[in-house]
Length: 133
Ligand code: FES
Image (tube, rainbow, N blue to C red; front, side, top):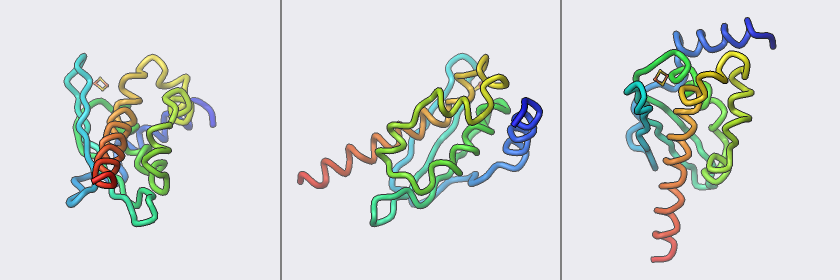
């Protein structure tokens, strides 16, 4: 993909967000924000009995790159385990969005990912607590 393709993809996700809206009930959710601008995103996940993420959604408002990033992330995260989400690499995600387009806005690009990692982390903590009980 060249720069133009990445830009087109980002705009498409911003204008036609995938999996946008509240997931209720959700097995975990987390809210994240970029203090520099006030943009926010909430990520929701459901985990199936086999331990894989069956649904992910996001809600929020913010710049094009942050909202497009959250939308792209929902497609990538479905089918992963919460542990795999915890281990996702920020730099690899920036590459997926188009490094040359988003690298100067890395905090925007990874807002959704950082938030989904927090939701995954919370899910795993709660599961460990429940399993140990
Ligand atoms: Fe706020 Fe991009 S300017 S997240």
